[in-house]
Image 1 (spheres, one colour):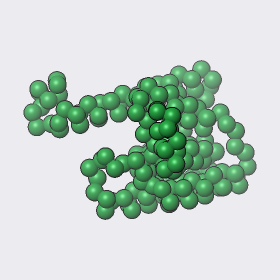
Image 2: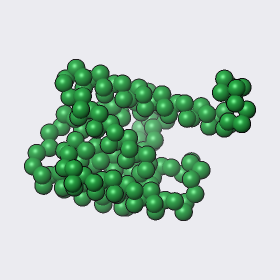
Image 3: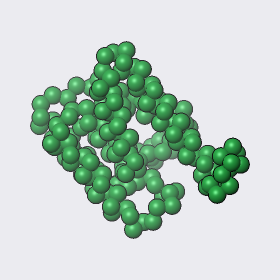
Image 4: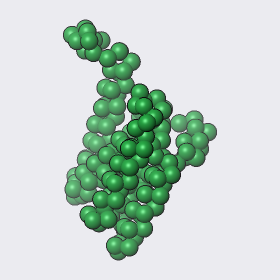
Length: 168
């Protein structure tokens, strides 16, 4: 209401609420990951995993959980898995990147039907998602490989069906 009162030309109240809640969820998830990664001495990995996961999610879409609290916890757990699950050897990174690209080529963007973005832009979102993951063939970050893989899995439609059955 404050924004609408002081800026009458702003978006509708539901759009403003969605934007603010999205930012709050991101801040909460990032704060959880930052605190845990600082305590364990893995802040850089935490930062890389958070940026990789959220950056890819922005373009590829993915699973949406109705409860903001559950979403925050699951997102933080996914990012923490990226930090603490060891991936060795360069070929493992390349395999994870390739699997992520295949999943994104097949499924992305997914879960963005409620957005006002015209369908004609979906191929561009798919291409951007694939290019983001492809960059890791040069960067060779195990943390990014895992973040990209877990995010690309959230674009698989059956994952949404299973979670909807669980009433999340």
